Length: 84
Image 1: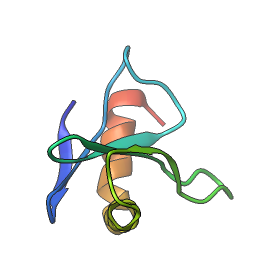
Image 2: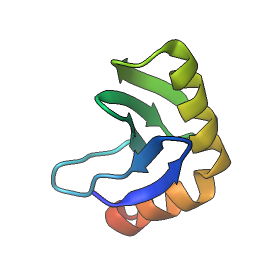
Image 3: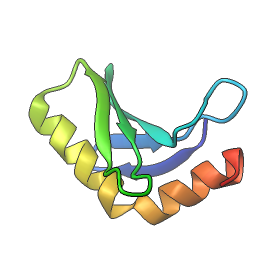
């Protein structure tokens, strides 16, 4: 699972097949054991938080904003592994 973005203590990764599956989403970790799963925007459906564990809600918002900021490179990484 390659790191796509590392910023402000958050690490954004995209898992590849066969483990992962559509729809496009990323796993954002916040050490030591925080995890936020964010689904990327698709068509008219906006980006959204799917799940989060062991993080404060303020960290969820920070992770969400990082994924928004780097959406183009994150989507490119997803499509490289999964296709369009």
